Amino acid sequence: MRYTPAGIAVIEFTISHVSRQTEAGVVRQIIFDIFAIAMDQLALGVAEFQVDSMVKLTGFLNRKSHMNQQLVLHANQIELI
Image 1: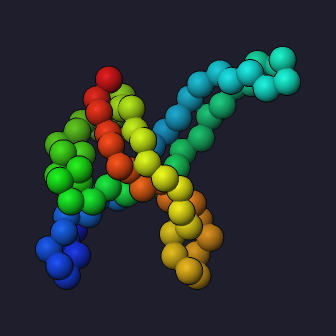
Image 2: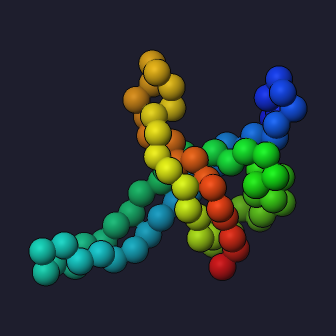
């Protein structure tokens, strides 16, 4: 975990997702990893999660920076499941 110059806690982590989804009547296996970030009190909570914890996460996607088009999931809410 790190802190911004304003003292806001920031944690970066990776979410691994596996599911089955139906598209046009065909079941597809979905497997991917995505880079994620949480800030402030949410970051402090995530820092206490165990590796391989199962979570339900909501947030939004954005590119990593103006120069880097990699997608990053910005977490707004995370709960252990």
